Length: 244
Image 1 (cartoon, rainbow, N blue to C red):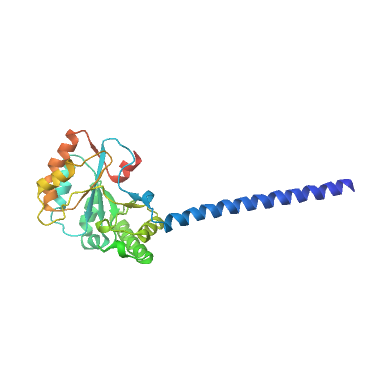
Image 2: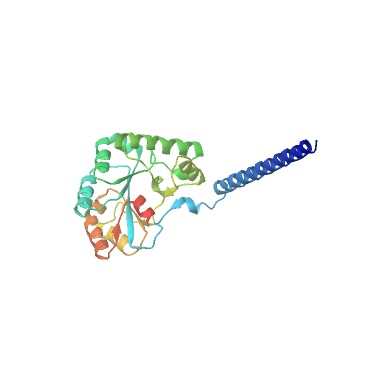
C-alpha cells in the first residue's frame, strides 16, 4: 500500500515538472515572437539595412545597379577582367527579361548577381504584398536565367520602407543593401572625373560603392580601380566582403 502511494506521489511530481517545463517553453517562444514583432513594427530597422562591410579592413565593394541600357556593359566587364576584379550586379527582372544573354554573360564572368526588384518602381511607397510579389518575381527569373544562387536584394533608387524590409527577410534575404557611396553616375551631365572624385574623396574600408552601366562610369572605372589598388584596397563582391 505504501509502495502504491509513493508511486502516485512520484507520478504527480513528474506531471508537475512536465507541466512547468511546458509553461517555460511557451513563455520563451512567446518572448521570441514578441521580439520579432517589435523588430518589424518599430521604426528602427538598422540591423536589416546593409550599408557597409562588418570589418574596418581596406576592403570595398561595387554595387552596379542595372535597369536600363546595355551599351556600356561589355566595356565595364572587360575593365573588371583586366584587373581581375569581381563585383555585385543588382539586376532588375524586367532588364534581365529583355537582355537574358547579357545577364547570363555577367554571371558567367564570375560576378555576383543580386536582386534589384522586377520593376524600377518606388519601393518606399509599396505595401508588404506588393513588395513581396515584386522581389519574388525578380528572384525567380534571375535564378532561372543565370542559375545563380541570389543572396542579396537592393531596392531601386535606395527607396524602401518597413514593408520592403519585412518582405525581403521573409524571402530569405539577410536584409536590404543600400550603398554607402553614391557616385551620382546616373545624373545626365556628370563626367568621368566627377565619378572618380565622388569615390576617392570619400572612400573608407567597408564601403559599398553604387555605380550604373553609364558612360561616365565606363570611362572612369580603370582609373578608379587602379587608384584603389594603389591605396591597397581589396575589391570583393558584397557577399564576400560581409564574411570578412
